[in-house]
Length: 364
Image 1: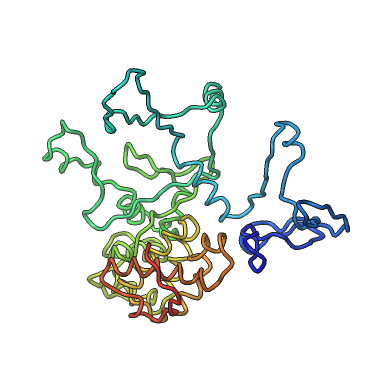
Image 2 (image 1 turned 90 degrees about the vertical axis):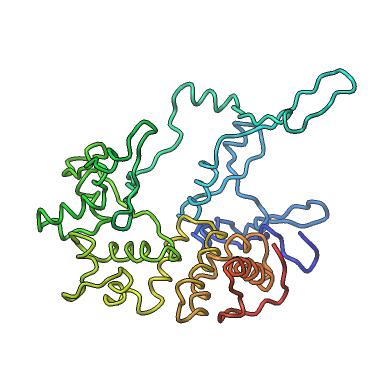
């Protein structure tokens, strides 16, 4: 507890429940029966509402204190993968000689070393799987005309690289070619293509899928990227395009930019696409990245109803702060201050947008 008038940072005591249910913040509301049993701990009377989630079998097996939580939501998995892929464990070590009057060189004595525990060494020695994704997901390339990524070595001649035919065969360009060669393929969206075809990167070719399953996901594009973002928007909604020009053609009229085509199709008449962009980013991005994206949208996309966009996505924007505090005013101020700092780096201020007023300004 943090004082008599403040609530516990971990939100104890929890509510009593007859059954375990899924909470709105992705954490479960565990079964906590009102048995009437109470215990005295440090002059405080505690009941089932104060019990931390645990697994008796694991505690007995490892003879240690363990808290166990159920992960059953994409929000929980997002944080789980944050720690799985954060990199290997490290230790900073320093070895000093016993001699006196040693001249310490702070740069040379620093050693960045990897730490491999006995458990990790054993796990890798027996080649146990470290992680698994099912079904597998294929990241679909996204690039503007003549702006695809080209790989080459130091020994390659640039003239040969430019002429190399297979370099031009990207996922997206080959997707267009498939739609040109067979009209039956035009029923598919770009993101649905991996369900029916497999990508051979060495040959630059889509082959008909015969077994297993796979899902496709177009790589992310930030609204600040302009045309690349609107290209992704069109590929998400237009089925079976056979070229970039075809994507830009709406009702028989070919537009000069992807943005004009998206506007003509009604994809960006309102703030719906911006809201979808934030909602999609919330699945795999952490709150700080979402706040930066929100600032970018304010700066570059000129949303019509800023306050509605703020209200709709406030829970995702403030997710990490809400876990550490229950003071709603303080949480809102922290979120607004951070968005304000991002806007300031872009030459804008919070006061230029229809956002709540900051009660307690602060600097990060």
